Image (cartoon, rainbow, N blue to C red; front, top):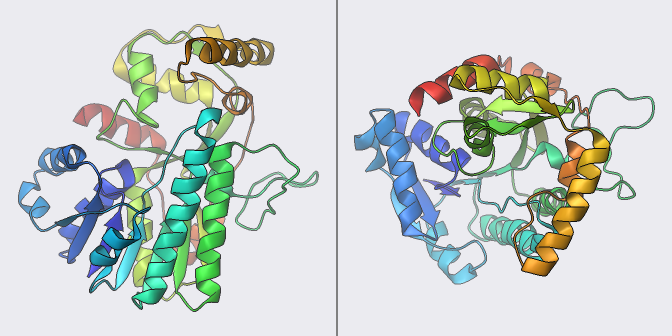
Length: 330
C-alpha cells in the first residue's frame, strides 16, 4: 500500500494519476476536502475519472501525529509531497513548522511503521552553493550557511536533514530536487502564476535564469526511483536551464498575448522589494516581492541533471512541449 502526502497539490495530484494508471493501491491524505476537487478535475481532464475512485482519501495533517498514525496503518511506501511554498518573510515560522517539523513527523512514522521506502520531494532551492571555480550546481554542491538563502530554501534544507536522519536510522530514502515545475491543473498558484500574470498583461521581464521541469517527468522519475534499489541518494530534476525572458516570451507567444516589454533591472527590483516591504508593514498586506525573489530574478543558475540521466538513463520532455501541453489542456 502506498501513501501520498500533498495529494491535492500539483506534484501529488499528478503522482496519484500515474500511480492509479499502473494499478497501484494508493491512499492519500488531505486537510481541506474542497481541494480534492482539483485532483478530481485533473483525472477528468485526462479521461481517468474512474481511476480517481481507486484512491483511499484520509483526513490528516502532517503536523497532527494522531491523525497520521491512522493514515500509516498498513503502508509500505510513502511519497512525501506535502509542503508550504511561500517567499513572504512573514511566513518564516509557518515554513519551518510545516516543512521541517512536518517532514520529521513523516520520517518518524515511516520508521515506527516499518515503511520500506520514503521518497521526499525537495527543491533545487535546497541544493548547495557554487564555489568560485564551479559553474554548475549539482547534488554534491555544499550548502554554505554564510550565503543568503530564502526562508523557503532553509526550510527545505532542514527537511532534507530530517530525511537523512531517517536514512541513518535504517529507513530507505530517495530525495528529488525539482526545478520550477510546470504542469496542468493550477494556474493561480506556484509556477501556474507565470501563465495567469502573462495572460493578464504582465509588463516586466528579467535576464536571470533557473532550471525547469515538467510535472510528468517529476512523478515518473519518483516512481522509477521508488521501484529501484537506489537508496540514500538525491537527484536534481531539471529538463532545461532557461532564462526568465525566454520562458516569459515563449508563454506569451503560445497564449497569443502581448510580450512583456520592460526589462526589470537590478536597481529597479532592489527598490521594488523595499517599497513592497513598507506597504506590507503599513497596510498589513501579503508581500508581493521579497528581497530573495528580487535577487533571484537576476541570478543565473545552471543546475546539472547528469546524475538522474545516468542513474535511470532518463530523457526529459522539452519545456517547449510541456508548455504546449499545459496551454492546450487549460
